[in-house]
Length: 336
Image 1 (spheres, rainbow, N blue to C red):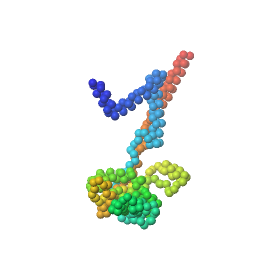
Image 2: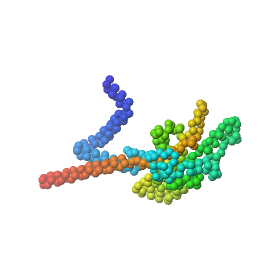
Image 3: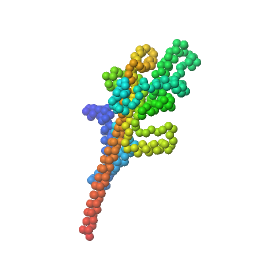
Image 4: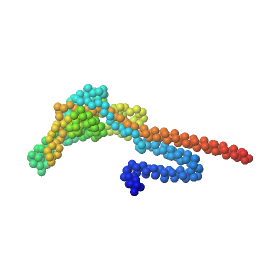
């Protein structure tokens, strides 16, 4: 009964089962190799040879881990919040963030769509459904659909507009705002996720859930140089070589902006209302710095350690071979 209970507990706990599987593999595979070598060379020499082979293999494996960032990795790159600014970016604790214009100093996304006349942006954010496109809708339903689409158009963020029409955003100068550049929403997922988590971790800001605010725009500055527009093969090669040869990584910052939304009632059986920012509330800017992490640190340490142990074991075997050769020579001289 006691053995059955023990086996059942091992089968239920994946940690214990995994540990036993690894230990079994080590004993069977490595142990069998050691047994074969030791049976032919002796226990001491066989052990030295087996351990030298193991650490030589570990050196090759950890070198591959180090090169490709695989295996036993360190901490992954992440965004670290250094300041949460409410209202005026000019009062930010990060001097670099003070150079970024406040949202009210720039055209809104909808204003730029209307002023630009860009066909792609207009088709996405300045058109309304028509009766010809929706012949099955009643007049009231069509009016409600048009009102909802107009709210969507007018609330488009600059980052959303940059996703649909990157050229329009660059023409507006949003790619160089005192060294900062606007990021499309498709390139800002990790920074936005970190910003939301940090905002909700500060209850003094008054946000209970992510439904209490709307993510607006994301800006970034610093980091390694980017490829230019429409790069050729030579441009890509030279860019890769230059960035690979760079010893230090320029510090990269990101600013994620959000704003509280109006409290709108939810009607049962209907889709939730589209979030509308409360213009009376200040814009909250989450200022973050990029932490490059240490993905390759652990593989590098394993590689260096394995190489040192491998060389030490090889030297030990070399010394033993020299001593054995000297003894054989003495024995042959004595026999002669």
